[in-house]
Image 1: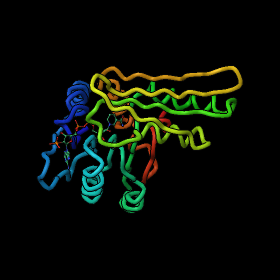
Image 2: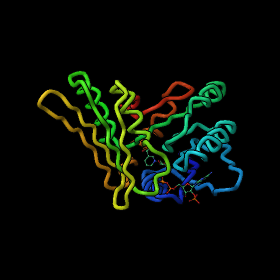
Image 3: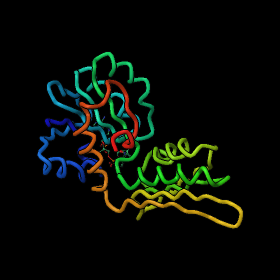
Length: 209
Ligand code: NAP
């Protein structure tokens, strides 16, 4: 596919662009500050920042290009109507790592058997949003409004623990992302399946697994 990449110079972009190219995609990095021209491309990928993703995504949809978005900390719902109107796909996943998606599934299952849970999400110190999109989605999926603790420190990449407490027992479900290449499989899967999705917004890698 011919892909536009918003955020190619970022930490995730640096890890993903070579993997997308090795998988046979042609990637056009989009420069910051220049009005994006993505007309005629097959898809746009966005890993930028919460204040940049809404405009990038809107511009791509207005130019007839479906989007795969990993940027967290913004609400894509207002763009659902635009994507539907144009018969385009807007796929947004707060976590493109398959291990993290399984962590959420397992946490959802465990939640049925424990009265209380808390979430600890730990990320590198440059992460701009808190709580993380993955923690917010996990909280929605397990229900009961669990407390989310956010840790931002050098040395971390992206990690999350869901701790369940019950009478005389604890259950901890933990996922560690140790390198950003872990997001590549999910992005490749989303690109591969993009045209099979219904027009409009689809949230979460779970929808593709
Ligand atoms: P980062 O290192 O700060 O990279 C973001 C890049 O986007 C930077 O190069 C930035 O340029 C650029 N940028 C900002 N605004 C832009 C715009 N309007 N158009 C084009 N490029 C723009 O951040 P990151 O660690 O790569 O993470 C990027 C986003 O992905 C964050 O929201 C993060 O939470 C999210 N993320 C999601 C997943 C997932 O699986 N869904 C995984 C990891 C990260 P400047 O530095 O010049 O501003």
